[in-house]
Length: 68
Image 1: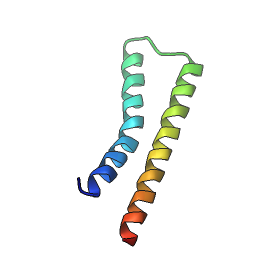
Image 2: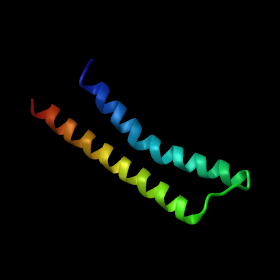
Image 3: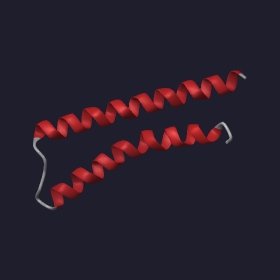
C-alpha cells in the first residue's frame, strides 16, 4: 500500500461525510419527512467534528510523509 492511499481515503471521508449528510437531509426534505431541529443539529455537529478530525489526521499524515 502506498502512502498516498490512506491520505486519499482520509480526504474523501472528510469531504464525503458532510456531502452525505447534505444528501440525506435533502432527500428527507423532498419526502416531507424532515427530522427535528435537535436531531439535525446533533447530526451536523457529529459530521463536522468527524470531518475536522479526519482532515487533521490527513494533515498530520501528509506532514509526516514529507519529512521522511
